[in-house]
Image 1 (cartoon, each protein chain N blue to C red):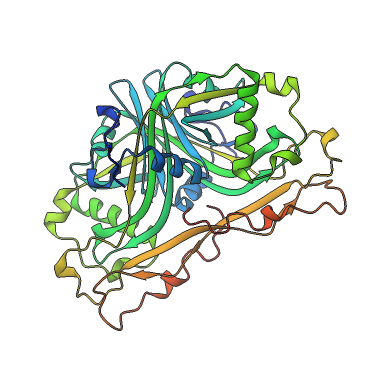
Image 2: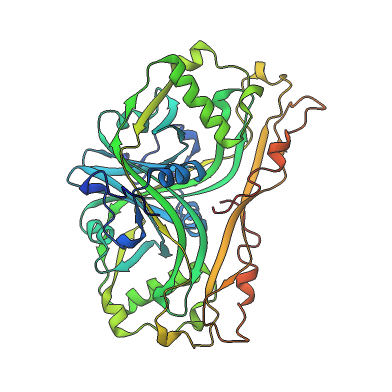
Length: 223
Length: 223
């Protein structure tokens, strides 16, 4: 979790609470963002903060978000301060006392400002990375985007510059006097598993889901 | 999804994008909040929005958050505009074109202001509801909270007044011309499953996890 240069890029992205769990290692930040199924974007409108769930794609040290040109969140991200957060929950942590019930998790917070991507090739690539994140390798199967679809889409980029990770691992931090209590304590790992695929109406006869659909997330840990 | 009185409590909590997915039904809002493993809280500090993941408990039409008296997020929630968001992902949605790749989800957004709970009984109850949310029925097993622990904890309440839900269900919304493409399309349901419990150090010999640990989340749908 520590690197040779494990320092926050700015004071405001420094983890304040339980700093021993903090990391500013860019590789760790990237790995958490890639594993998280989705993320949250917070923006401010007329003094009121809003936070909305959304899908994200990462290419190098840039996060991409896409949606319709009419999407309010994407519009509000442009040129304003925003915050992106993504978390993977690894386990429930059950201690012997009320305060020691928690979770093991890996989370990332990114501060920055959204910038609209106008270059068609970069827009398209960001949208395809997002498809591949839902189901690796699916990209070549899809009907190509039309020019009209590309024009009606907005892609917003946020650089991974001011960012931090926070990670909790290990057993509950019960005080020593509580350890002999006749109560089970420990960690319960959680993971996501896929169910039975539900075909959409009109899928032609004989067209089966790719193997990656049925085995989605195999080897995955965390939620 | 609609009720006799399915109207937003305020204009600013009205769902703008895809309003056909919106609901202001309080029962639905409560159910989503209870099912979501955790939530996010957004607050503004010096013009910069921040969003952090946290555990929440619901009692009636109040959301509770707890942590140390030194927790910055809890302090920043008091008397300021905040936003709480919780989402359950039900399935990946895979369409035939790039734009029709998405998720089925149930999400809630709550706008409001945090208020500190000073009444000891209400503080304690909120913290115990949180324990029960991680593992139903675990509350009686735990070593009771001490007065010092209660004093060092802060509980912040947010009323469920300005809130909205947004729900996507069903297959990808592919255009009709795409339906005959030889590409599998549909939904892949996701759910959370527990792994093998990892006992904490010093659990006395013979103390086994309660049945609820091993069967955690059974019958659960969504992530």
